[in-house]
Image (cartoon, rainbow, N blue to C red; front, side):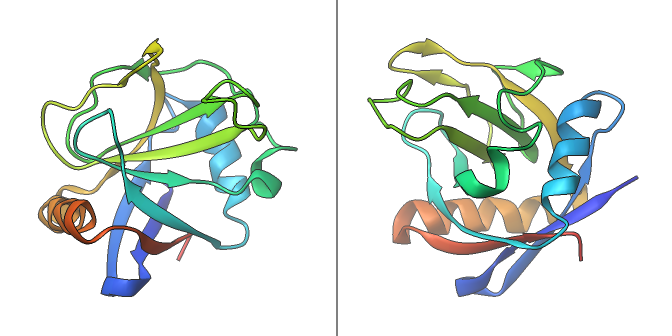
Length: 157
C-alpha cells in the first residue's frame, strides 16, 4: 500500500497516511503522481464542514493532471476521523474565485460533513491517516482551530 506524509512544519508534527487505491484508483494515482516532488502549502481550519483541516493544493501542480475535474469515486459527505477527501471546484464556482480549487480535506473529528452554503458537496475519499497518528491529528486540528494557519509539506517520504 502506498503511504505518504503530512508534515506540519510550524509544529514539527508528521502524520502518515495510506491511499485507498482500490476504492479511489484514479484519485490516488493522480495524487501520488503530484507528489513526485513534495508539495508545500498551508493548512487552515475549515469554516463549514466541522472538524477539518483544509489544505489547498497549488493550482500549477493540479491543473494539468487528473486532479483537475477528477472522476467521482468513493464519494462521501460524512467523513470520519482520519479520512482524507479530495474535492475539486472549478473556477468561479466558490464565491467567484477565478481560480479552480483543489482541496485536500483532512478530517480530525466526529460529526464532520461536507455541507457548504451552496449545499452538499461530496468529496472523493482517497486516503486515511494511520490509526497510530489519529490522536496527534486531533491535537493538530484543535491547535489550528485556535492558533490558525500552519505551513504543510505533503511528500512520499
